[in-house]
Each structure stands twice: as structure tokens, then as C-alpha cells.
Image: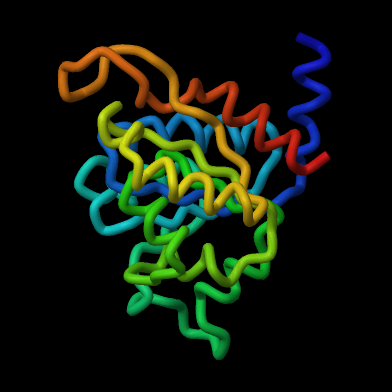
Length: 189
């Protein structure tokens, strides 16, 4: 436990931009935000429109103690575009949960939303925790997209096996929050 705590301490004072995409597992981003803050990280949450259907920006804003960004069109009043500012500030760009759609956007360099725009603009380490139906995760297209991102230096926390929201049993559940926090800290070592 002491080794884990010393490892997680590497998050202290770091800026984590936490992307939340539209998976049923989005509710777990509340615990993830809290754990990252407990470890001393400054957390800025970026949500896709779809994610707001599973958990509210108010919840994540309260837990992160920072405004939540959802749209390119709602960016701040400063001269610098908000997505570039967040991309530049990030010590770590973490996406949990990441849907098949979001992973495809990243792999193909498409920017239909704020989260994908920040992904393309950041030079911080990127850590992605997929969460989706097992058939979607195992599909050749998703696996190809994961390989593309991995070849570009993106890090992953594989989903785990368990009962999925769709009622199936299989791979696709978001990795445990403590594992995501530990992997996040490891990238900042």
C-alpha cells in the first residue's frame, strides 16, 4: 500500500485533463475525478455532448472544482481558444470512459467535438480507458483503431471482463478506478 501511495503522489500538482465520453460508465468519472483530486491533481473535465446524458457537468464541476467544458462554442472569454489552452496546460490527457466512437475519432484525426480537438492539440501523454459492449470492443475496426493509437504512443488501460450494461457478460467494463489512477501516476513519473 505504501508503494502505491508513493506512486500516486506523483499526481500532486499535476494538471489532468479528464475526457468523459458517452458511455454508461460515464457515471464512474465522478469517482475518478474525486480520486485524482485526492491524489493532489488539478482536474479539468471535458465532456462530450453524449456524456452529459449519463452524468451532469454540474456533478463533475463540483467534484473537480473547475468549470466543465462541453462544446467548442462555449469556450472562455480570453483571446486563446479554450481547447488549445487546456491542451497546453495538460500534464496528462486521460479519457475514461472512451467509447468506440471517440477512439475512432482520435485514430482518424477527426474533430467533431471539443474532446477530439484537445486530443489533437495536446502534447501531454495520453491515457485511454475504453468502455463499451464487448462485441464493439472486439470488432476489427475498433481493434485497428486501438493499434493506430498505440503506434502513435497512446497508452491504454484495457477494459475488464464482467457483466456489461447491455446484459452480456464479457470484456468491455471500464477498468477499476484505482487502476486508472495508478496508471495515470505512472505516466507522470
